[in-house]
Image 1 (cartoon, rainbow over the protein chains, first blue to last red):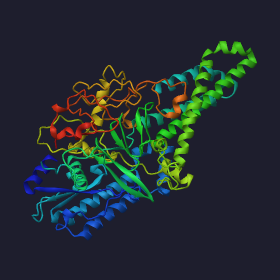
Image 2: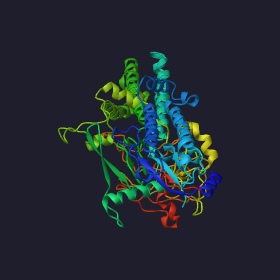
Image 3: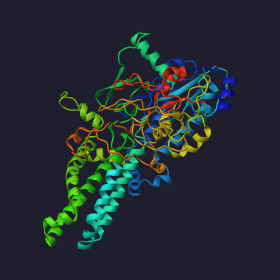
Image 4: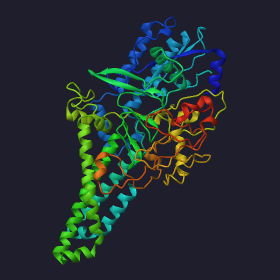
Length: 155
Length: 428
Protein backbone atom coordinates (compact mmCIF):
# COMPACT_ATOMS: atom_id res chain seq x y z
CA UNK A 1 0.00 0.00 0.00
CA UNK A 2 2.68 2.33 0.98
CA UNK A 3 4.49 1.79 -2.27
CA UNK A 4 1.34 2.42 -4.16
CA UNK A 5 0.82 5.58 -2.32
CA UNK A 6 4.27 6.75 -3.07
CA UNK A 7 3.74 5.98 -6.70
CA UNK A 8 0.53 7.89 -6.68
CA UNK A 9 2.19 10.79 -5.09
CA UNK A 10 4.95 10.70 -7.57
CA UNK A 11 2.88 10.39 -10.65
CA UNK A 12 -0.12 12.45 -9.79
CA UNK A 13 -0.88 14.90 -7.11
CA UNK A 14 -4.12 14.95 -5.35
CA UNK A 15 -5.96 18.16 -5.80
CA UNK A 16 -8.98 17.58 -3.68
CA UNK A 17 -11.49 15.02 -2.60
CA UNK A 18 -15.11 15.27 -3.37
CA UNK A 19 -17.58 13.49 -1.17
CA UNK A 20 -20.95 12.32 -2.26
CA UNK A 21 -23.02 12.00 0.86
CA UNK A 22 -25.70 9.54 1.70
CA UNK A 23 -29.26 10.21 0.71
CA UNK A 24 -31.57 9.29 3.57
CA UNK A 25 -34.80 10.33 1.93
CA UNK A 26 -35.79 6.71 1.55
CA UNK A 27 -34.96 5.71 5.06
CA UNK A 28 -31.95 3.94 6.37
CA UNK A 29 -31.29 2.01 3.20
CA UNK A 30 -27.92 2.73 1.67
CA UNK A 31 -28.25 5.27 -1.08
CA UNK A 32 -26.04 8.03 -2.33
CA UNK A 33 -27.13 11.39 -3.53
CA UNK A 34 -27.28 11.72 -7.26
CA UNK A 35 -26.73 15.46 -7.08
CA UNK A 36 -23.73 16.33 -9.18
CA UNK A 37 -20.93 17.96 -7.17
CA UNK A 38 -19.89 21.32 -8.55
CA UNK A 39 -16.19 20.58 -8.22
CA UNK A 40 -16.39 17.93 -10.88
CA UNK A 41 -18.06 20.14 -13.44
CA UNK A 42 -15.27 20.18 -15.93
CA UNK A 43 -13.75 16.83 -15.06
CA UNK A 44 -16.46 14.41 -15.94
CA UNK A 45 -19.78 14.35 -17.68
CA UNK A 46 -22.78 14.48 -15.41
CA UNK A 47 -24.44 11.56 -17.04
CA UNK A 48 -21.52 9.25 -16.39
CA UNK A 49 -21.30 10.01 -12.72
CA UNK A 50 -25.03 9.83 -12.32
CA UNK A 51 -25.05 6.49 -14.00
CA UNK A 52 -22.34 5.20 -11.68
CA UNK A 53 -24.13 6.41 -8.60
CA UNK A 54 -27.46 5.02 -9.76
CA UNK A 55 -25.92 1.64 -10.44
CA UNK A 56 -24.28 1.63 -7.05
CA UNK A 57 -27.57 2.54 -5.44
CA UNK A 58 -29.28 -0.32 -7.21
CA UNK A 59 -26.61 -2.71 -6.00
CA UNK A 60 -27.15 -1.58 -2.44
CA UNK A 61 -30.88 -1.97 -2.80
CA UNK A 62 -30.27 -5.49 -3.99
CA UNK A 63 -28.01 -6.21 -1.05
CA UNK A 64 -30.47 -4.94 1.49
CA UNK A 65 -33.54 -6.30 -0.15
CA UNK A 66 -35.79 -8.08 2.27
CA UNK A 67 -37.38 -10.90 0.43
CA UNK A 68 -37.57 -14.62 0.02
CA UNK A 69 -33.87 -15.23 -0.28
CA UNK A 70 -32.90 -13.13 2.67
CA UNK A 71 -35.53 -14.77 4.86
CA UNK A 72 -34.32 -18.16 3.85
CA UNK A 73 -30.77 -17.19 4.59
CA UNK A 74 -31.77 -15.75 7.93
CA UNK A 75 -33.73 -18.79 8.98
CA UNK A 76 -31.07 -21.19 7.82
CA UNK A 77 -28.46 -19.22 9.68
CA UNK A 78 -30.54 -19.22 12.83
CA UNK A 79 -31.20 -22.92 12.56
CA UNK A 80 -27.54 -23.69 12.21
CA UNK A 81 -26.59 -21.27 14.98
CA UNK A 82 -24.90 -19.09 12.39
CA UNK A 83 -22.24 -21.68 11.81
CA UNK A 84 -23.30 -21.74 8.20
CA UNK A 85 -21.62 -18.38 7.73
CA UNK A 86 -18.28 -20.00 8.21
CA UNK A 87 -18.87 -21.79 4.96
CA UNK A 88 -20.80 -19.38 2.92
CA UNK A 89 -21.01 -15.67 2.39
CA UNK A 90 -24.09 -13.71 3.13
CA UNK A 91 -25.90 -12.20 0.23
CA UNK A 92 -24.84 -8.78 1.37
CA UNK A 93 -21.21 -9.75 1.22
CA UNK A 94 -21.64 -11.20 -2.23
CA UNK A 95 -23.18 -7.99 -3.46
CA UNK A 96 -20.44 -5.97 -1.83
CA UNK A 97 -17.93 -7.95 -3.79
CA UNK A 98 -19.82 -7.19 -6.96
CA UNK A 99 -19.81 -3.55 -6.05
CA UNK A 100 -16.12 -3.63 -5.47
CA UNK A 101 -15.58 -5.15 -8.88
CA UNK A 102 -17.88 -2.61 -10.46
CA UNK A 103 -16.07 0.30 -8.91
CA UNK A 104 -12.76 -1.07 -10.02
CA UNK A 105 -14.03 -1.42 -13.54
CA UNK A 106 -15.49 2.05 -13.54
CA UNK A 107 -12.25 3.45 -12.27
CA UNK A 108 -10.25 1.77 -14.96
CA UNK A 109 -12.54 2.66 -17.79
CA UNK A 110 -14.01 5.99 -16.95
CA UNK A 111 -12.53 7.73 -13.97
CA UNK A 112 -8.83 7.12 -14.15
CA UNK A 113 -8.55 8.50 -17.68
CA UNK A 114 -10.08 11.68 -16.32
CA UNK A 115 -7.81 11.87 -13.34
CA UNK A 116 -10.43 10.78 -10.86
CA UNK A 117 -10.60 7.87 -8.49
CA UNK A 118 -13.60 6.40 -6.80
CA UNK A 119 -13.18 4.86 -3.39
CA UNK A 120 -15.47 2.05 -2.46
CA UNK A 121 -17.94 3.36 0.12
CA UNK A 122 -17.42 0.33 2.29
CA UNK A 123 -13.96 1.62 2.96
CA UNK A 124 -15.45 4.81 4.25
CA UNK A 125 -17.94 3.10 6.48
CA UNK A 126 -20.70 3.58 3.93
CA UNK A 127 -20.85 7.23 4.83
CA UNK A 128 -19.69 8.74 1.59
CA UNK A 129 -18.66 7.99 -1.92
CA UNK A 130 -15.25 9.53 -2.08
CA UNK A 131 -13.93 10.79 -5.37
CA UNK A 132 -10.29 11.74 -5.35
CA UNK A 133 -9.48 14.40 -7.88
CA UNK A 134 -5.98 14.35 -9.24
CA UNK A 135 -4.22 16.83 -11.38
CA UNK A 136 -5.49 16.54 -14.86
CA UNK A 137 -2.71 14.78 -16.64
CA UNK A 138 -4.65 12.36 -18.71
CA UNK A 139 -3.92 8.96 -17.30
CA UNK A 140 -2.54 9.74 -13.91
CA UNK A 141 -1.40 6.71 -12.01
CA UNK A 142 -4.58 5.06 -11.09
CA UNK A 143 -5.08 1.93 -9.20
CA UNK A 144 -8.22 0.07 -8.49
CA UNK A 145 -10.04 1.87 -5.82
CA UNK A 146 -10.45 -0.99 -3.50
CA UNK A 147 -6.80 -1.59 -3.23
CA UNK A 148 -6.09 2.04 -2.79
CA UNK A 149 -8.27 1.99 0.20
CA UNK A 150 -7.66 5.07 2.14
CA UNK A 151 -4.16 6.01 1.32
CA UNK A 152 -4.73 8.65 -1.19
CA UNK A 153 -4.67 11.51 1.19
CA UNK A 154 -1.81 13.78 0.65
CA UNK A 155 -0.98 16.21 3.32
CA UNK B 1 -24.77 -12.59 33.37
CA UNK B 2 -22.94 -15.65 32.25
CA UNK B 3 -21.96 -16.63 35.73
CA UNK B 4 -25.44 -16.13 37.03
CA UNK B 5 -26.96 -18.30 34.38
CA UNK B 6 -24.36 -20.98 34.71
CA UNK B 7 -24.61 -21.08 38.46
CA UNK B 8 -28.31 -21.31 38.27
CA UNK B 9 -28.45 -24.04 35.74
CA UNK B 10 -25.91 -26.03 37.69
CA UNK B 11 -28.06 -25.71 40.79
CA UNK B 12 -31.03 -26.82 38.82
CA UNK B 13 -29.21 -29.78 37.45
CA UNK B 14 -27.92 -30.98 40.74
CA UNK B 15 -31.01 -30.50 42.75
CA UNK B 16 -34.09 -31.01 40.71
CA UNK B 17 -33.01 -32.87 37.68
CA UNK B 18 -32.13 -36.24 39.14
CA UNK B 19 -35.48 -36.36 40.82
CA UNK B 20 -37.38 -35.21 37.80
CA UNK B 21 -35.51 -37.49 35.48
CA UNK B 22 -36.54 -40.43 37.56
CA UNK B 23 -40.07 -39.39 38.28
CA UNK B 24 -41.06 -37.95 35.00
CA UNK B 25 -38.78 -38.27 32.08
CA UNK B 26 -35.08 -37.86 31.38
CA UNK B 27 -35.93 -35.50 28.56
CA UNK B 28 -36.25 -32.71 31.08
CA UNK B 29 -32.58 -32.23 31.82
CA UNK B 30 -31.77 -32.72 28.17
CA UNK B 31 -34.19 -30.03 27.13
CA UNK B 32 -32.95 -27.80 29.88
CA UNK B 33 -29.41 -28.29 28.77
CA UNK B 34 -30.21 -27.58 25.16
CA UNK B 35 -32.07 -24.43 26.09
CA UNK B 36 -29.21 -23.32 28.25
CA UNK B 37 -26.73 -23.83 25.47
CA UNK B 38 -28.91 -21.83 23.15
CA UNK B 39 -29.11 -19.01 25.67
CA UNK B 40 -25.36 -19.10 26.05
CA UNK B 41 -24.83 -19.04 22.32
CA UNK B 42 -27.06 -16.07 21.76
CA UNK B 43 -25.55 -14.25 24.70
CA UNK B 44 -22.07 -14.72 23.35
CA UNK B 45 -23.16 -13.71 19.93
CA UNK B 46 -24.82 -10.57 21.20
CA UNK B 47 -21.88 -9.64 23.35
CA UNK B 48 -19.28 -10.23 20.79
CA UNK B 49 -20.84 -8.97 17.61
CA UNK B 50 -20.37 -5.56 16.26
CA UNK B 51 -23.74 -3.88 16.83
CA UNK B 52 -23.31 -1.76 13.73
CA UNK B 53 -20.71 0.72 14.74
CA UNK B 54 -20.23 3.60 12.38
CA UNK B 55 -16.59 4.35 11.94
CA UNK B 56 -15.51 7.88 12.49
CA UNK B 57 -15.12 10.14 9.53
CA UNK B 58 -11.72 10.55 7.97
CA UNK B 59 -10.21 13.97 8.45
CA UNK B 60 -10.91 14.84 4.83
CA UNK B 61 -14.56 14.04 5.19
CA UNK B 62 -14.80 15.93 8.41
CA UNK B 63 -13.15 18.95 6.86
CA UNK B 64 -15.46 18.78 3.87
CA UNK B 65 -18.52 18.63 6.08
CA UNK B 66 -17.28 21.46 8.22
CA UNK B 67 -16.74 23.52 5.15
CA UNK B 68 -20.25 22.86 3.96
CA UNK B 69 -21.68 23.68 7.31
CA UNK B 70 -19.67 26.85 7.57
CA UNK B 71 -20.90 27.91 4.19
CA UNK B 72 -24.43 27.16 5.22
CA UNK B 73 -24.17 28.93 8.55
CA UNK B 74 -21.91 31.70 7.43
CA UNK B 75 -19.94 31.37 10.64
CA UNK B 76 -16.37 30.53 11.23
CA UNK B 77 -14.07 30.36 14.09
CA UNK B 78 -16.28 29.35 16.91
CA UNK B 79 -18.32 26.26 17.23
CA UNK B 80 -21.78 26.84 15.86
CA UNK B 81 -24.81 25.52 17.67
CA UNK B 82 -25.58 21.82 17.30
CA UNK B 83 -25.88 21.03 13.69
CA UNK B 84 -28.86 19.27 12.27
CA UNK B 85 -30.01 18.37 8.87
CA UNK B 86 -33.59 17.65 8.06
CA UNK B 87 -34.66 14.93 5.77
CA UNK B 88 -38.07 13.69 4.81
CA UNK B 89 -38.51 9.99 5.08
CA UNK B 90 -41.78 8.49 4.00
CA UNK B 91 -43.51 11.76 4.63
CA UNK B 92 -42.08 12.30 8.10
CA UNK B 93 -39.52 14.95 8.79
CA UNK B 94 -36.57 13.46 10.55
CA UNK B 95 -33.73 15.49 12.01
CA UNK B 96 -30.26 14.15 11.46
CA UNK B 97 -27.89 15.28 14.12
CA UNK B 98 -24.24 15.97 13.68
CA UNK B 99 -22.06 13.92 15.96
CA UNK B 100 -19.15 15.97 17.22
CA UNK B 101 -17.23 12.94 18.29
CA UNK B 102 -17.52 10.96 15.12
CA UNK B 103 -17.73 13.98 12.85
CA UNK B 104 -20.58 12.66 10.83
CA UNK B 105 -24.18 13.40 10.37
CA UNK B 106 -25.74 10.41 11.99
CA UNK B 107 -27.96 8.34 9.76
CA UNK B 108 -31.56 8.12 10.86
CA UNK B 109 -32.03 5.84 13.86
CA UNK B 110 -28.36 5.91 14.69
CA UNK B 111 -27.24 7.21 18.00
CA UNK B 112 -24.00 7.79 19.76
CA UNK B 113 -23.40 5.53 22.70
CA UNK B 114 -21.48 7.31 25.37
CA UNK B 115 -20.39 4.08 26.96
CA UNK B 116 -18.96 2.64 23.83
CA UNK B 117 -18.09 6.03 22.43
CA UNK B 118 -19.28 5.13 18.99
CA UNK B 119 -22.20 5.93 16.82
CA UNK B 120 -24.23 2.79 16.34
CA UNK B 121 -26.66 2.17 13.54
CA UNK B 122 -30.24 1.57 14.54
CA UNK B 123 -29.21 2.09 18.12
CA UNK B 124 -31.47 0.27 20.49
CA UNK B 125 -29.78 0.57 23.82
CA UNK B 126 -26.58 -0.25 25.58
CA UNK B 127 -27.05 -3.40 27.57
CA UNK B 128 -24.74 -3.76 30.55
CA UNK B 129 -25.77 -7.37 31.03
CA UNK B 130 -24.47 -8.19 27.67
CA UNK B 131 -21.69 -5.67 27.82
CA UNK B 132 -22.37 -4.29 24.41
CA UNK B 133 -24.61 -1.96 22.53
CA UNK B 134 -27.60 -3.50 20.87
CA UNK B 135 -27.91 -2.16 17.38
CA UNK B 136 -28.66 -3.13 13.86
CA UNK B 137 -26.36 -6.08 13.59
CA UNK B 138 -26.98 -7.80 16.85
CA UNK B 139 -30.55 -6.95 17.69
CA UNK B 140 -31.83 -10.30 16.54
CA UNK B 141 -29.32 -12.12 18.68
CA UNK B 142 -30.26 -10.01 21.62
CA UNK B 143 -33.91 -10.74 21.06
CA UNK B 144 -33.28 -14.44 20.74
CA UNK B 145 -31.23 -14.27 23.89
CA UNK B 146 -33.94 -12.71 25.98
CA UNK B 147 -36.60 -14.88 24.44
CA UNK B 148 -34.71 -18.08 25.09
CA UNK B 149 -33.79 -16.87 28.54
CA UNK B 150 -37.46 -16.31 29.25
CA UNK B 151 -38.22 -19.84 28.17
CA UNK B 152 -35.37 -21.15 30.22
CA UNK B 153 -36.46 -19.26 33.30
CA UNK B 154 -40.03 -20.41 32.93
CA UNK B 155 -38.81 -23.92 32.30
CA UNK B 156 -36.69 -23.98 35.41
CA UNK B 157 -39.39 -22.34 37.45
CA UNK B 158 -42.00 -24.82 36.35
CA UNK B 159 -39.88 -27.85 36.93
CA UNK B 160 -38.51 -26.81 40.25
CA UNK B 161 -42.05 -26.26 41.43
CA UNK B 162 -42.97 -29.63 40.03
CA UNK B 163 -40.07 -31.16 41.89
CA UNK B 164 -41.16 -29.62 45.14
CA UNK B 165 -44.76 -30.64 44.66
CA UNK B 166 -43.93 -34.18 43.76
CA UNK B 167 -41.52 -34.43 46.65
CA UNK B 168 -44.10 -33.11 49.03
CA UNK B 169 -46.61 -35.75 47.94
CA UNK B 170 -44.09 -38.35 48.88
CA UNK B 171 -42.50 -36.85 51.94
CA UNK B 172 -44.45 -33.89 53.06
CA UNK B 173 -43.95 -30.29 52.20
CA UNK B 174 -41.48 -29.25 54.86
CA UNK B 175 -39.37 -32.35 54.46
CA UNK B 176 -39.21 -31.78 50.76
CA UNK B 177 -38.06 -28.23 51.30
CA UNK B 178 -35.46 -29.27 53.81
CA UNK B 179 -34.08 -31.88 51.51
CA UNK B 180 -33.41 -29.49 48.70
CA UNK B 181 -33.00 -25.98 50.02
CA UNK B 182 -31.50 -24.94 46.74
CA UNK B 183 -34.88 -25.46 45.15
CA UNK B 184 -36.35 -22.81 47.34
CA UNK B 185 -33.70 -20.39 46.28
CA UNK B 186 -34.29 -21.31 42.68
CA UNK B 187 -37.99 -20.74 42.95
CA UNK B 188 -37.51 -17.34 44.48
CA UNK B 189 -34.92 -16.24 41.96
CA UNK B 190 -36.90 -17.62 39.06
CA UNK B 191 -40.04 -15.95 40.22
CA UNK B 192 -38.48 -12.54 40.10
CA UNK B 193 -36.53 -13.24 36.93
CA UNK B 194 -39.58 -14.43 35.13
CA UNK B 195 -41.33 -11.15 35.63
CA UNK B 196 -38.43 -9.05 34.54
CA UNK B 197 -37.19 -11.15 31.67
CA UNK B 198 -40.55 -12.08 30.29
CA UNK B 199 -41.52 -8.45 30.60
CA UNK B 200 -38.45 -7.43 28.68
CA UNK B 201 -39.15 -10.01 25.99
CA UNK B 202 -42.67 -8.78 25.69
CA UNK B 203 -41.48 -5.23 25.39
CA UNK B 204 -39.03 -6.09 22.67
CA UNK B 205 -41.63 -8.13 20.86
CA UNK B 206 -43.77 -5.03 20.80
CA UNK B 207 -40.85 -2.97 19.56
CA UNK B 208 -40.08 -5.41 16.80
CA UNK B 209 -43.65 -5.61 15.66
CA UNK B 210 -43.88 -1.85 15.46
CA UNK B 211 -40.36 -1.49 14.08
CA UNK B 212 -39.14 0.86 16.73
CA UNK B 213 -35.99 0.96 18.75
CA UNK B 214 -35.91 1.24 22.52
CA UNK B 215 -34.34 4.62 22.04
CA UNK B 216 -37.22 5.83 19.89
CA UNK B 217 -39.81 4.37 22.18
CA UNK B 218 -38.35 6.01 25.24
CA UNK B 219 -38.13 9.35 23.53
CA UNK B 220 -41.59 8.93 22.11
CA UNK B 221 -40.32 9.84 18.67
CA UNK B 222 -43.19 8.22 16.85
CA UNK B 223 -45.78 8.46 19.53
CA UNK B 224 -49.11 9.84 18.50
CA UNK B 225 -48.94 12.05 21.56
CA UNK B 226 -46.48 14.25 19.76
CA UNK B 227 -48.86 15.13 17.05
CA UNK B 228 -51.70 13.81 15.02
CA UNK B 229 -49.57 13.22 12.01
CA UNK B 230 -46.73 11.59 13.83
CA UNK B 231 -46.15 8.07 12.68
CA UNK B 232 -43.24 5.73 12.32
CA UNK B 233 -41.83 6.10 8.83
CA UNK B 234 -39.81 2.92 9.07
CA UNK B 235 -42.66 0.63 9.87
CA UNK B 236 -44.15 -1.26 7.00
CA UNK B 237 -47.50 -1.23 8.74
CA UNK B 238 -47.72 -4.98 8.90
CA UNK B 239 -46.65 -6.71 12.12
CA UNK B 240 -45.53 -9.80 10.35
CA UNK B 241 -43.37 -7.91 7.89
CA UNK B 242 -41.82 -5.87 10.65
CA UNK B 243 -40.93 -9.00 12.56
CA UNK B 244 -39.48 -10.67 9.54
CA UNK B 245 -37.39 -7.67 8.67
CA UNK B 246 -36.01 -7.33 12.16
CA UNK B 247 -35.27 -10.97 12.70
CA UNK B 248 -34.68 -12.45 9.29
CA UNK B 249 -33.59 -9.49 7.26
CA UNK B 250 -30.16 -9.31 5.68
CA UNK B 251 -27.30 -8.90 8.08
CA UNK B 252 -24.94 -6.22 6.90
CA UNK B 253 -21.27 -6.88 7.41
CA UNK B 254 -19.27 -5.06 9.97
CA UNK B 255 -17.89 -1.70 8.92
CA UNK B 256 -14.98 -1.87 11.23
CA UNK B 257 -11.87 -3.85 11.33
CA UNK B 258 -11.72 -5.68 14.57
CA UNK B 259 -9.02 -8.08 13.69
CA UNK B 260 -6.34 -5.80 12.44
CA UNK B 261 -3.28 -5.34 14.50
CA UNK B 262 -2.57 -2.18 16.26
CA UNK B 263 0.47 -0.60 14.80
CA UNK B 264 2.78 1.79 16.49
CA UNK B 265 1.90 5.37 16.07
CA UNK B 266 3.29 6.66 12.85
CA UNK B 267 5.23 9.86 12.55
CA UNK B 268 3.41 12.92 11.35
CA UNK B 269 3.73 12.26 7.68
CA UNK B 270 1.66 9.18 7.65
CA UNK B 271 -1.55 9.90 5.95
CA UNK B 272 -4.38 9.30 8.26
CA UNK B 273 -6.61 6.52 7.28
CA UNK B 274 -10.01 5.79 8.39
CA UNK B 275 -10.95 2.84 10.32
CA UNK B 276 -12.32 0.65 7.70
CA UNK B 277 -10.66 -1.52 5.30
CA UNK B 278 -12.54 -4.56 5.68
CA UNK B 279 -15.95 -5.81 5.72
CA UNK B 280 -17.03 -9.25 6.45
CA UNK B 281 -14.88 -12.20 6.82
CA UNK B 282 -14.12 -12.30 3.18
CA UNK B 283 -11.76 -9.43 3.19
CA UNK B 284 -10.14 -10.12 6.42
CA UNK B 285 -7.11 -11.75 4.99
CA UNK B 286 -6.56 -9.02 2.53
CA UNK B 287 -6.81 -6.31 5.00
CA UNK B 288 -4.50 -8.04 7.34
CA UNK B 289 -1.95 -8.37 4.71
CA UNK B 290 -2.56 -4.92 3.54
CA UNK B 291 -1.59 -3.51 6.80
CA UNK B 292 -2.78 -0.14 5.84
CA UNK B 293 -5.03 -0.92 8.30
CA UNK B 294 -6.75 1.41 10.16
CA UNK B 295 -6.77 0.06 13.44
CA UNK B 296 -9.66 0.63 15.29
CA UNK B 297 -9.20 1.55 18.77
CA UNK B 298 -12.08 -0.58 19.16
CA UNK B 299 -9.70 -3.15 18.52
CA UNK B 300 -7.04 -1.74 20.58
CA UNK B 301 -9.25 -1.60 23.54
CA UNK B 302 -9.33 -5.30 23.76
CA UNK B 303 -5.97 -5.68 25.28
CA UNK B 304 -6.65 -2.86 27.50
CA UNK B 305 -9.44 -4.66 28.98
CA UNK B 306 -7.13 -7.21 30.25
CA UNK B 307 -5.11 -4.74 32.04
CA UNK B 308 -8.11 -2.97 33.25
CA UNK B 309 -7.63 -0.43 35.87
CA UNK B 310 -8.40 -1.08 39.45
CA UNK B 311 -11.41 1.12 39.34
CA UNK B 312 -12.76 -0.89 36.67
CA UNK B 313 -12.75 -4.11 38.40
CA UNK B 314 -13.68 -6.04 35.40
CA UNK B 315 -11.58 -8.68 34.05
CA UNK B 316 -12.30 -8.69 30.45
CA UNK B 317 -9.65 -10.69 28.84
CA UNK B 318 -8.41 -9.59 25.54
CA UNK B 319 -6.56 -10.94 22.70
CA UNK B 320 -3.19 -12.13 23.61
CA UNK B 321 -1.84 -11.03 20.33
CA UNK B 322 -2.31 -7.41 21.05
CA UNK B 323 0.05 -5.74 23.33
CA UNK B 324 -0.32 -2.53 25.06
CA UNK B 325 1.61 -0.01 26.77
CA UNK B 326 -0.07 0.55 30.06
CA UNK B 327 -3.73 0.69 30.38
CA UNK B 328 -5.65 3.81 30.40
CA UNK B 329 -7.86 3.58 33.30
CA UNK B 330 -11.45 3.88 32.71
CA UNK B 331 -13.41 6.44 34.48
CA UNK B 332 -14.50 5.62 37.91
CA UNK B 333 -18.02 4.93 37.14
CA UNK B 334 -20.43 5.72 39.76
CA UNK B 335 -23.32 7.14 37.91
CA UNK B 336 -26.02 5.47 36.05
CA UNK B 337 -24.81 6.41 32.66
CA UNK B 338 -21.21 6.97 33.06
CA UNK B 339 -19.69 8.60 30.17
CA UNK B 340 -16.39 7.21 29.46
CA UNK B 341 -13.73 7.59 27.05
CA UNK B 342 -13.85 4.08 26.07
CA UNK B 343 -13.58 3.80 22.48
CA UNK B 344 -15.16 0.60 22.13
CA UNK B 345 -17.28 -2.23 22.86
CA UNK B 346 -16.24 -5.58 23.77
CA UNK B 347 -17.24 -6.73 20.44
CA UNK B 348 -15.59 -9.64 19.01
CA UNK B 349 -17.01 -12.28 16.86
CA UNK B 350 -18.25 -15.20 18.76
CA UNK B 351 -15.84 -17.34 16.93
CA UNK B 352 -13.01 -15.55 18.54
CA UNK B 353 -13.57 -17.53 21.63
CA UNK B 354 -12.81 -14.81 23.99
CA UNK B 355 -13.92 -15.43 27.46
CA UNK B 356 -16.67 -13.27 28.56
CA UNK B 357 -16.99 -11.05 31.45
CA UNK B 358 -19.13 -12.62 33.97
CA UNK B 359 -20.13 -10.09 36.42
CA UNK B 360 -23.60 -9.13 37.13
CA UNK B 361 -24.50 -5.72 36.08
CA UNK B 362 -27.66 -3.97 36.08
CA UNK B 363 -29.58 -3.56 32.96
CA UNK B 364 -30.35 0.05 32.65
CA UNK B 365 -33.47 -0.66 30.80
CA UNK B 366 -36.35 1.12 32.46
CA UNK B 367 -38.44 -1.95 32.57
CA UNK B 368 -35.86 -3.62 34.60
CA UNK B 369 -36.03 -1.28 37.47
CA UNK B 370 -38.49 -3.31 39.34
CA UNK B 371 -36.53 -6.45 39.08
CA UNK B 372 -35.17 -7.56 42.37
CA UNK B 373 -32.18 -9.08 40.74
CA UNK B 374 -30.82 -5.89 39.54
CA UNK B 375 -28.97 -3.99 42.09
CA UNK B 376 -27.37 -1.18 40.40
CA UNK B 377 -23.74 -1.40 39.65
CA UNK B 378 -21.65 0.78 37.58
CA UNK B 379 -21.20 -0.39 34.10
CA UNK B 380 -17.73 -1.46 34.71
CA UNK B 381 -17.61 -3.72 31.84
CA UNK B 382 -17.04 -0.79 29.70
CA UNK B 383 -13.63 -1.44 28.43
CA UNK B 384 -11.01 0.96 29.38
CA UNK B 385 -9.58 2.94 26.65
CA UNK B 386 -6.63 1.64 24.89
CA UNK B 387 -3.44 2.06 26.59
CA UNK B 388 -1.86 2.48 23.25
CA UNK B 389 -0.92 5.78 22.12
CA UNK B 390 -4.08 7.27 21.15
CA UNK B 391 -6.34 7.66 23.93
CA UNK B 392 -8.03 10.66 22.63
CA UNK B 393 -10.62 12.00 24.84
CA UNK B 394 -13.99 11.94 23.35
CA UNK B 395 -15.08 15.45 23.19
CA UNK B 396 -18.08 17.11 22.12
CA UNK B 397 -20.63 14.56 22.53
CA UNK B 398 -23.44 15.80 24.61
CA UNK B 399 -23.51 12.86 26.93
CA UNK B 400 -19.88 12.43 27.22
CA UNK B 401 -18.03 13.80 30.09
CA UNK B 402 -14.55 12.81 29.85
CA UNK B 403 -11.92 13.29 32.39
CA UNK B 404 -8.94 12.49 30.37
CA UNK B 405 -6.75 9.95 31.72
CA UNK B 406 -4.52 10.32 28.85
CA UNK B 407 -3.20 13.49 27.62
CA UNK B 408 -4.51 14.40 24.25
CA UNK B 409 -1.95 17.09 23.95
CA UNK B 410 0.69 14.51 23.69
CA UNK B 411 -0.84 13.14 20.63
CA UNK B 412 -0.21 13.95 17.14
CA UNK B 413 -2.38 16.84 16.18
CA UNK B 414 -3.29 15.10 12.99
CA UNK B 415 -4.58 12.22 14.87
CA UNK B 416 -6.34 13.97 17.57
CA UNK B 417 -9.76 14.16 16.19
CA UNK B 418 -9.93 10.86 14.51
CA UNK B 419 -8.38 8.87 17.17
CA UNK B 420 -10.86 9.38 19.78
CA UNK B 421 -12.16 5.98 20.03
CA UNK B 422 -12.80 4.03 17.01
CA UNK B 423 -10.37 5.04 14.41
CA UNK B 424 -6.76 4.97 15.02
CA UNK B 425 -4.59 6.49 12.46
CA UNK B 426 -1.93 4.23 11.34
CA UNK B 427 0.90 4.45 9.00
CA UNK B 428 0.26 3.36 5.53
